[in-house]
Amino acid sequence: TSRVGKVIKCKAAVLWETSKPFSIEEVEVAPPKAHEVRIKMVAAGICRSDDHAVNGTMYVPFPVILGHEAAGIVESIGEGVTTVKPGDKVIPLFTPQCGKCRVCKHPEGNFCLKSKLSQNQGSLQDGTTRFTCRGKPVNHFLGISTFSQYTVVDEMSVAKIDAASPLEKVCLIGCGFTTGYGSAVNKIQVTRGSTCAVFGLGGVGLSVIIGCKAAGASRIIAVDINKDKFAKAKEAGATECINPQDYKKPIQEVIAEMTDGGVDFSFEVIGRLDTMMAALLCCHEACGTSVVVGVPPYSQNLSMNPILLLLGRTWKGGVFGGYKSKDSVPKLVADFMAKKFSLDTLITNVLPFEKINEGFDLLRAGKSQMLLVLFF
Ligand code: COD
Ligand code: ZN
Ligand code: ZN
Image (cartoon, rainbow, N blue to C red; front, side, top):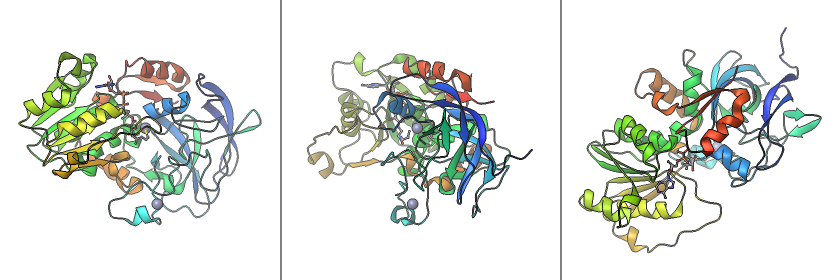
């Protein structure tokens, strides 16, 4: 029997309050309104930002269904939807691409003004929610809420992908992989034969390394205070791995000595102010570029001497690898299908959806470099 146009009852991981475990609940998912899409989730990754929403580092209204890195299949569409149809494989987009705002019309900008990242009000674009649980409305997260067997998203927040793609892998293209990889190959273009330094070897940092390698960098220096992360970094393409705690000198000086005055490209993929400054300083003062990928602590500032830029350095940042989401996600999936990169090194744990709390425990213990929750 068709569920089209009807409320669906299914399981979702509801977070009722800050810093509590998720509770697997039966929720009601309303049908999609005009320009909306209801998706059956197949696989969802756990990203660090989900944990930031749990522990309050990132503001979200409660109760909420988190999750923003996933892949699924369109169950039904609302009136006026033209870019996806029922049965299509899709990736939900935590940064939408409305196609109409100033940023979407800019040739390079990608942080669409319709994004919910800057104004986490917990609704879809029309200001209302599609989830209820125990009679109460439940908030959306970044417009996509993927920790639910079914979710509703705006059409601008979903991309159709290759029908043959393995959803349990390409779900990582929804956030972590793309954020890192795109920082190296799209936000800036790492050049063939160049020298790179990557600070932070979580899943996003590893994805930066994969991007640097794909771009033909000849040296990729991986930096982390946890040496257990080095094996995966080498697997991803790092040529050298260093631990700042092994040196008396500041790590930027160590790297400058290793690289004749500094690297061509550096990436901060941790989200700390001190490492953002170290990454800036370790790129060459006249011809280096440094990219901020990690999300800094809420409302903290860096103070810096502008001379650091005056001599010629470039300092950049970007979300989602600088990619315009709806245009680029299908292309990234096509590149994956054409074997331009592999996602296997990034997937360290696979769990059934019901074990989501175990997944977050692994993430918090730093045991996983990237993690996957499977739905069934
Ligand atoms: N020096 C060197 N390494 C360090 C230091 C330090 N002082 N402190 C921590 N580290 C290492 C840790 O040992 C760890 O290996 C690594 O840094 C950080 O890894 P994770 O696993 O915490 O982080 P990731 O790879 O999951 O990345 C998350 C980011 C930190 C990059 C996070 O800010 C993020 O998800 N950014 C994406 C930006 C974005 O677009 N966000 C919006 C939606 S997610
Ligand atoms: Zn994320
Ligand atoms: Zn837009």
